[in-house]
Image (cartoon, rainbow, N blue to C red; front, side, top):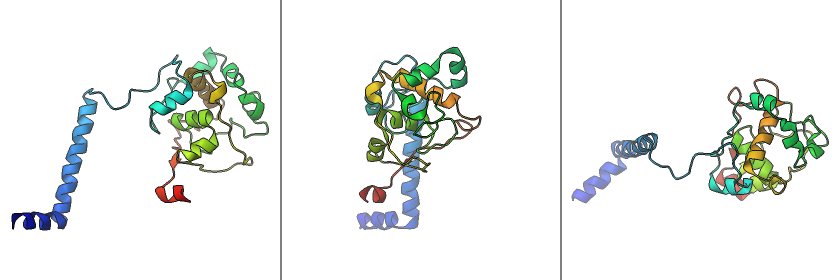
Length: 196
């Protein structure tokens, strides 16, 4: 009899709200534990000078977990010749010597096909667009070039070099087109879209 009454309460609206409240309390407790300094399932990302290969860093952090150690990209661009970092792996062969465009899209116009967060840019450059799509990301818009972005991780020696390339790309974009002024998060495909 008691089990029958408990089942009826749980199936009622009041029971549903009670379960939701309980779930909220559990989640709030987890957030409080993490805020108190308890270790999380993933270490904090990322540090300047990191020599981890880009693909290894991608395997370590879930989507949304990669954050550039070079948030003041404009200052970094003045202090270091970042264009050299951009040219070393061959980015200039497709995107032009200064990122202004070649036979691939210009990287200096504040137009983001996949999103403009650190995480999306890092994954796009390292994995290439085909692998990024395989991992569930969705292209947001198209420009005049419909070709794929090749995976560049094979020619970028470490994560620090890739973060500096991203800092260079951000430094040549118009003001207000980069985070935090303008955030365009990457989009993940819904399970229905992935099956198509």
